[in-house]
Image (tube, rainbow, N blue to C red):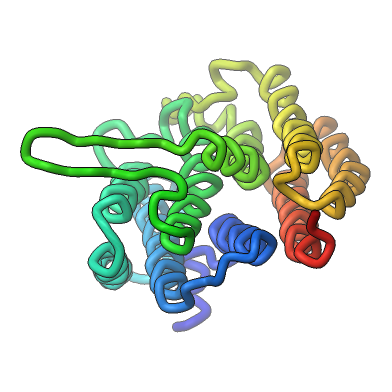
Length: 302
């Protein structure tokens, strides 16, 4: 039963959310901000369970048309979705109760995206937006919420709500630093989706699923695949130059050698069974090195 459940929710794919979470914790450690363990664990629980929920919804919907079998009877599979969704929602609402309306709104947006990624009349997964949305919600929203609940009030933004107006004040420099930090999780996550869609291009067209590679073409999609990785290295150089991260983080640039080798392998052949794994490998190589070196940089800070 446990093995079936883990396969149903594709537990191995949860590296995208857990690495984004871990990188953000490393950054909090680097800048010397104490982690609110209670809030962070509540957020992690809600985030992780909802990640399982979205994958379960995706598999439940897709198996209606792709001739593959679910690990459970459809009634049981649907019940699992509702249980996961209910528990993750409870964690999210509890976190919002302990914090503020910003967390409630951001959490609600994440939940809506997760549900309508594969559900609804026009699922996001059938549009050329999957890479953008997956990169944004995993690579940007997860780090932002975790930072927001741990940083001093008003560090990134201030929101004042009243019956007559909504006032939002943004802190430009902290937000610019944050956006540079999120380039790595954004690009590596988006590239997993992009590699998947490149490999499935012909199959997707056959079922009228028009993803980004359909509009860009395979050659331009491959160029984008490589370019997103290179953008990560540029962002790391910029963060060190602007003293957002320690010079120790420049060691992450050494990962360009195995990453480039994997890019070359994928360029030669785009196959779901054989070379899609290159995107997963690159994700782990870059995010593991980036996270560890941010953490180590705490002892080599300016």
